[in-house]
Image (cartoon, rainbow, N blue to C red):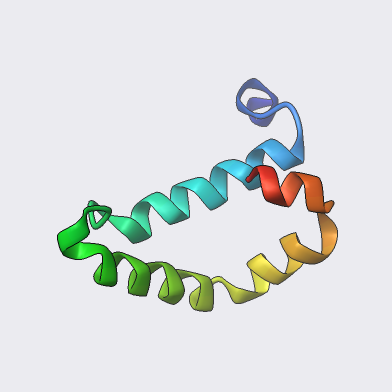
Length: 68
């Protein structure tokens, strides 16, 4: 039951996971001086989470993916 107190749908959980992973990967590297490191961190996070990313890509509609 705890799941439903935080996320109404599985898509909401998926969105939260992707946003949190991106936030952790950027880790304060969003400014002009550190953008290359931030971008590299994002690519590394996508590579590490490739199975999850591909499942999201194949299972969720394009509209929802663009929203996320």
